[in-house]
Length: 323
Ligand SMILES: CC(C)(COP(=O)(O)OP(=O)(O)OC[C@H]1O[C@@H](n2cnc3c(N)ncnc32)[C@H](O)[C@@H]1OP(=O)(O)O)[C@@H](O)C(=O)NCCC(=O)NCCS
Image (cartoon, rainbow, N blue to C red; front, side, top):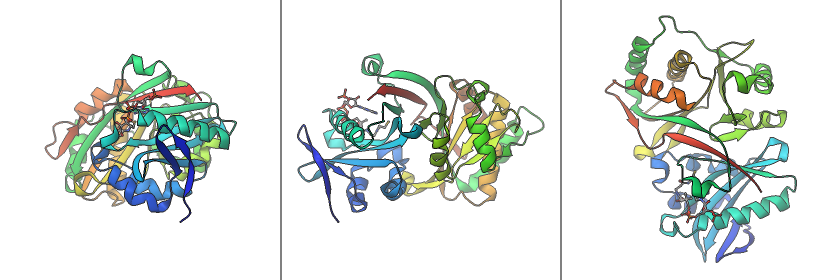
């Protein structure tokens, strides 16, 4: 396969990633994100995804870093994803080198790009954040369980529900998704200050061009009301991750502030995924939500012996800067 060398910077050579770099990428990524790394599953689709670049950095022939930029907001912004540096090369600024190079490369490719947005799972402290505008923070609940415990976990949650009647959340069709997503009142209703919209680590402005990006994710959208939704929950089909020798990952984004609706949404989603037969083996569940909801959902999920609450990820930090 033709290798596309993009150039050199600070002792590294930078390349456009190719499908057959997969094995190198996977071996560099061993153990990443506590085993909940999405890249082994997504790498090949990233190779052909429109408006995405994946850049590799090599020292001599050895792969030392990867970063991917996805063009969003109708060409005005890139979202950084998948950033990783080989464990033996960390702490020497490599993540900065590959990003500075890719910033220049993406500007050559798409001169209209003005902003760069990223989501971090750790807060590196104010000193490291001076270059960024902080758009917001969200809480994360991280759970691990075996699929055979899911039925009894759902019953456990149903018994704990604060509401005697579970309000059913309504699934949206494509036309309804468009209307809800573009509704100018949505951020105010679902209390998303600073962040226009977020799904699975990709913060987006609510503009028509971003609907295609969301459509590619095969999201199930659930809302509390069609006329004036104040609570949305979004989930993508579970996908394989390396955790515990091979597991499934279920990512759920909840937008909204209502504690009871958040509990109901979790029950609804687990029941739907369970009924569809989507959950097998070990399942990692990540729920992304407003920080105020985290404690409620955490105590809601506690107390079932088949479910572990994990501390690998507790918050998301949304950052933006000019390119
Ligand atoms: C996080 C990680 C990529 C940092 O790489 P590193 O080369 O060791 O980082 P260094 O501290 O030496 O480099 C500092 C530079 O990298 C940037 N950087 C460090 N961590 C970053 C992060 N999580 N997101 C974006 N940029 C980051 C810093 O902003 C700094 O850039 P600058 O030189 O332009 O100021 C690396 O530790 C890693 O691969 N960890 C596991 C995967 C991971 O957590 N990825 C981040 C996903 S949010």
